[in-house]
Image (cartoon, rainbow, N blue to C red; front, side, top):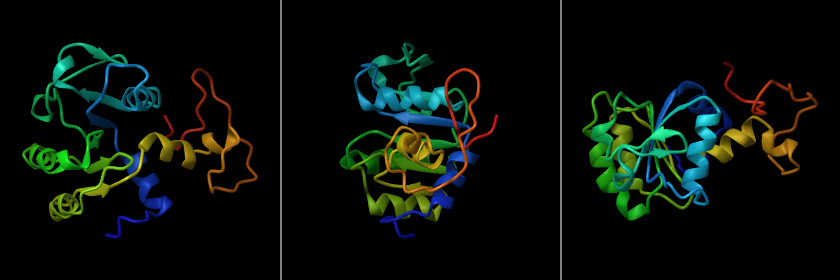
Length: 173
């Protein structure tokens, strides 16, 4: 697969199909991007498992942190990697040891490892690299465009306002 560009349908398909996400490298510091992404995904209805060995048993954005992928209380549909590219091969080993395997491995902005992507794809796991699920969700759901940022999605439809936390969502609950 070409990991330099992704079709909107590929990204939307992933964000619509996964229900649970393990965030490797989630931070308890509420000004860190990994904290904000964790909180955003929870607010969008995903079940999120923060992975941070220094915060094991404590809450990060309202979810209890696990020490490692091996310690997840239940299977995760997606693993979101918030670590440096150099850490990806080791995390890939942990992912390939999971049973069942996740459907998707997502590597955050600036995180890329083509060799790991090839290993994961050989096992039937979809891979996204150098992208943020929060940004992609906002772009595809038109939340970013609604706020005045160019989302590259043109529509004449007025967003549907819902109760509670404002979400135009690509996921329907």
